[in-house]
Length: 238
Image 1 (cartoon, rainbow, N blue to C red):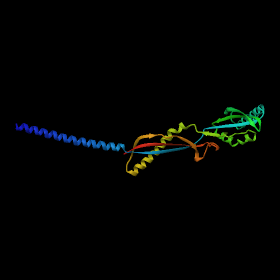
Image 2: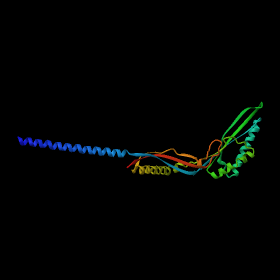
Image 3: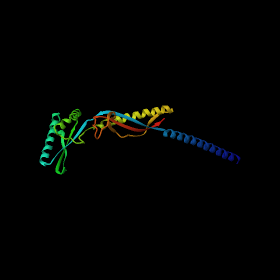
Image 4: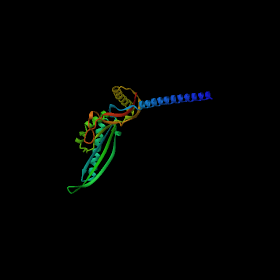
């Protein structure tokens, strides 16, 4: 009987030891897991910038002009003369006839000094990828004025860069490298290392006049552009 009690007590002791060891191991693993989880949550969010100077590949010049008078037929003849003058102007500069297209016309009748007056307006648009020739045309636009074409406000040239998709991948990669450089500097200052990307957000691509030159209403546009993108990247810290 005493031997059986001893064996039973020994069994309880062994079970207690195993239970204690299990609790200790579980606590260690839990603590180690929490530590690893805390390390996994360590991250830094930075922004990366990429810029590239480009030249516009599309020029669009909308020419608005008008004639006014009391005789509708005469005014119509004047506006047709102006249209022919505009077409000769661009032909002399080497533009094909198809580069110019009519985009609108209008007739307005009112009274000026008590007399019935008609105003006829015409709109032609030049579209070309020959940027150098387009700039030369704009530089000589007052030749049209001297020939009697009454250019109205809004008759300006705009330049566009249409190949943005061609340079997007390289610019995003450059912005990401710039972001990593910032993250590495942060990690160096804090005594850590930089791991992989946790999350990333591509910013908005903007195309603006280079060197901060203004453009828009009343200001001549420029074919020299700057493409800019800012990405936000979150890196793991090691």
